[in-house]
Length: 277
Image (tube, rainbow, N blue to C red):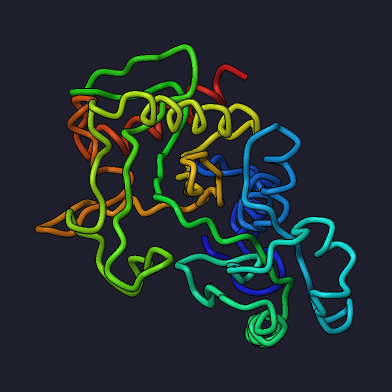
């Protein structure tokens, strides 16, 4: 379901299923491409009044990226001169994502990403605070084998991702297994933060008219203000085993849900939506 080739490969599977009239669990083609193309997602976040890290996009068709004379760059970043995060506009697993400390190194970093992807590059402000994630899905959920329909989207337990010494961006599960040492639930002693993250997740789900699960990745600045970085349209749903956990399933026990409840609830929610609307 990651697709085959082209600029929006994640749309291939849902587009084919739509064309053939086959029902499926997952995002429709429009939401798939908005979620997978980080700049489109961030523009829509801004339209919804949701904080996201200040950013610009660049690709080789615009000529060489020269930050000091780039009108849009100066409009967005002003006197800010780094550090920056440089990453592909589309893609998962934190591949080709880097932190660039100096303004003078930005051109080379963006060019390297473009050469590797032949696609647009995102340059955004690096946020030095804590990092969180929270998953959200539709309002028909399963707990202890029983289906319940709530009034809005269901947000899972918020998680804080811990950085190892020298780590500035969270290393993907594709490179390093996610264990209890690298991620932990936000406790009841931080009620305000929990509620902020839950509200953010629900606002994203409703604002984008989503019909399937996403995991929102959120980072704080030095003052603790939260900024949504992206929403993963294909979050890890692997069954946890041994000491390897999933950022989505780590808090299922808080909701009296088993792994089977999670999967069954996603199927039931999709069926409910299609049969109702």
